[in-house]
Image (cartoon, rainbow, N blue to C red; front, side, top):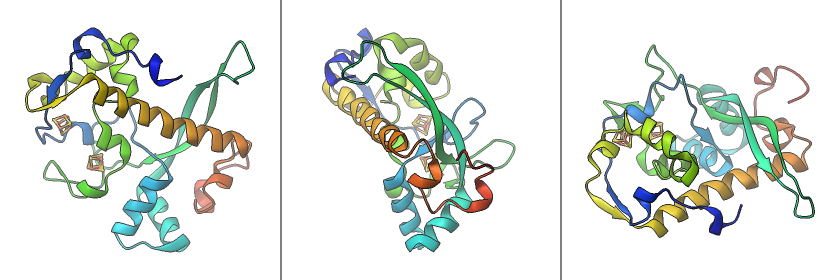
Length: 202
Ligand code: SF4
Ligand code: SF4
């Protein structure tokens, strides 16, 4: 997918106003979703809470993350058809009956400056803003007060497209790294504690 193919749905084509209302809804109740973290996210957060070096990363992963399923559609440049690949990635491990992020305190993100890219980018995820995904955006709007109000900072179509494109690039780079490593997450992230790697396919 190139940047040209990220076509925003009609309501976003002239840009839109949005501001986070700090309701914390997107940081809890993850029965239908996950927050993915990639290497830079993990390193930044681990450093912030003083978990340094490989032993620190190991502790961070054990305490805050879990291994989850991921997928990515990929077409080799010389092929007519692509396919969806399934593999593993790392995401937040949630807690409590309301499945909240460990870093949510009084409905606010306690690591705001260091939060993962997915949190930073919301709601301009490619999953939400692409032409064909309008239903997803409407579904998320039901729980996000900022999306209900649509007031505040103005985001142009170009800005929204850039966020979505960056998200796509991060996912693509992770996918390519996994592909290079035979889809073994333990090779890409050697600091994942052994007990989290249930079988050698990881
Ligand atoms: S890191 Fe912050 S913004 Fe992201 S889910 Fe956790 S509390 Fe929410
Ligand atoms: S659901 Fe929307 S308004 Fe609420 S914290 Fe998340 S981004 Fe902000």
